[in-house]
Image 1 (tube, rainbow, N blue to C red):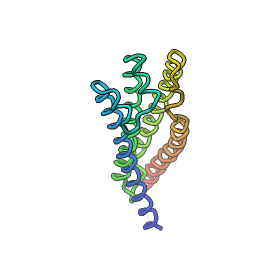
Image 2 (image 1 turned 30 degrees about the vertical axis):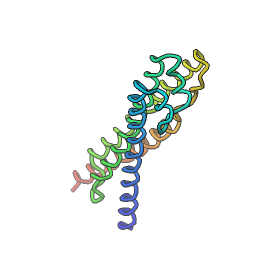
Image 3 (image 1 turned 90 degrees about the horizontal axis):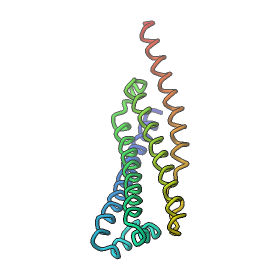
Image 4 (image 1 turned 180 degrees about the horizontal axis):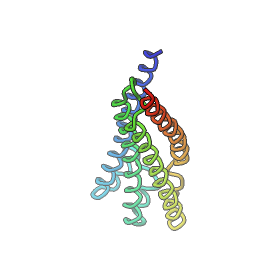
Length: 176
């Protein structure tokens, strides 16, 4: 049983690393697209992950365009950070004694990161709806954000279980 748990955690650890790399590529692509759009807007439209509505927004207003690209870059960077944090957490997790204050704190930090990602996505979607109404450029729902709130709830439950595990472990150490 221990071997299976260890194997599953190793697989999840490397999947988290792949997620971090993937979202880092997305963030870098958006950033490079933004930089190239300063000098060659037509080439920026053809780049990887160039969203049609957002690239058309450049012709309407540079302020809207730069703020929109900044939101996309921030969103991708935060997703990459969360996945890297999860990888680092799993890399440092000790299965011999998983119920520690450090582990409970790291799980709590993941909750805050997921909630901040959800809040940024909510703000971004509100901004995109506002810009779409003002410009007639379809920017609606560029952020899929509902799942981050749901994930934060699940991780919150796990964090409470870990906190209780830490309390029980401390009680057992006091009785010995």
